[in-house]
Amino acid sequence: MKVPRYRAIAGVLLPVLLVTIIFPVVAAGSDSCPGCGMVWKDTCAPFEKNNETAYNEELVAAFSPIAANQTPLADFSNESWSDAFLSLHTLFKERYAFTRWRAVDWDTLYQTYAPVIADAEKKQDKAAYYRALREYLFSVPDGYIGIMPATGEFGAKYADIGGGYGIAVSRLDSGKVIVSYVANGSAAEIAGIRPDDEVTTWNGKEIHAAINATSYIWAVKKPSTAEGILLHQQRFLTRGPVGKSVTVSVIRRDNSSPLIVNLTAYDDGYETLKKTSTFLGRQVNDYGVKQIWTDIQPQISNDTVTYRTLPGGYAYIAIYSESYDVYQPFKSAMQSAIKNKTPGIVLDFRYNSGGDDNIASCVAGWFVEQPVFYEYVTKYDPGTHTFKVLSEAWTQPQPDAFDGPVAVLVSPDTISSGEGVPMIFAKTGRGPIISWYGTNGAFGMNNFQAAMPLGQYITFPDGASLDINGTIQVDSNAMLAGGVSPQIRVPMNEDMVARSVAGEDVQLTYAMQWLDSQQKQNASFVPAVPATPTQKASLVPALPFVALGFVVAIAKRRK
Image 1 (cartoon, one colour):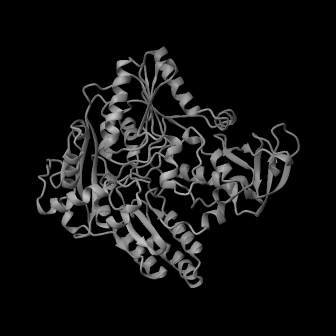
Image 2: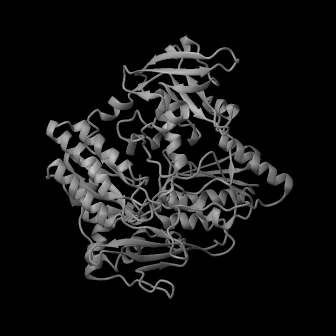
Image 3: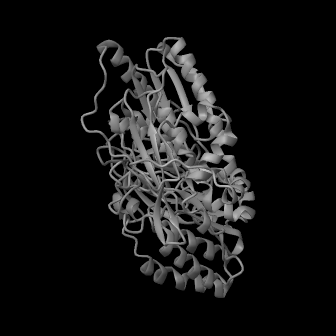
């Protein structure tokens, strides 16, 4: 997760903010945004100056219209579990930015989960309490509504999904659900189940009904869209408590008679979940780590930006977050690509967790030909109980911009400001989004909002990103539509599944093939229907945030 632009820099912003409240920084409004604390007509300008202190002052200035009314992190940690839940419920109703957009019925949710919380409290069942909180939070399809288990999960996750059945499944474009992985030596393999076998029923339910009924509350990056939810449900279908048995029916790939197998879940170290993380371009242990906020990213890269040359001379640039220190490595990568006369670029945002929207807007400026409106940012004002527009941002063409073909890779793990560059590409038709799935669809202004009993910290967006017409952008809506969708969808068929499980980054292969086609055609790609972007927000968690409640409330935006 990431804490919004005005989310990520909590520790840095607090001393600056306190000084600014006494000695205000002059903020620039505009005719289009007269009440804004800040207007960035060129979002690259602060990063070209390479002066982070000055930039932090600009961020603080953006909050000047509501700075006097900001409140500390809500601390419910000393209340009873039930009282704290009621307090949290009240806070959501007051400050959540997308209640109408997502048609959230907070009172019904409270009535549903308050008895569960009360029962867990009566029994002093910490695992049940934590599980109930997650179920409540996952009832709203917003990747930014989340929980940080600073003191652990009390064994709840392992109790629910610690067991695997020795197989993983994938849903194809045709609607068929196939076995994508079979563990060596597993009971499934011994019984004769093989990759490409079609799964028809799972524990007595038709396979699609079984997938749709599967809980996804243990998703590491909570999905916000219908396709993101479905992806996680099929990943979790083949998980369960260790020792639980299920009956699986498959049709063999060799068209022999149907096979019905009884399987018992065993502790496999979350192996089947690793095998189904290939939408990221590689297999990642996203569930078997101790701390998801520190132990997953190093499996992808220890760098903020990755740059390398691909076959054909194409430049590959992967950006994993949007923070101040991202710009210079990105700029260096772009300059190298241009100097080397690269015939095309692949921008990889598949594991981008967000950060500062201005960085995202600036990165997009290296590819656009005309100024593009990026966003208005809103934030809840506790003093007036309204959401106020705080800033305005524009993506401007940069002097050394690249004008060749560009392909953009995304995934459901592309969240918050990580969705910003794909959004600009979708708006302008600059180059295709190429992927199996769209981005997460969580583009709001995210923050740590409340401390709960047993060391649990709650995040949710209390601000939104608006387009030039003042409409919420990128965030998924009540119909679970949102995010930035691919204009070129990589086929999900037996061949692609087999190749990805074997270790090939088939989405990257597809992007390179598209670049090859551009060289042959010497023509630009124009998508038939530009995708509709979604919203952003992300949390770059650092546990010292507990002592920085006030700062977290005004920290950089999302993501």
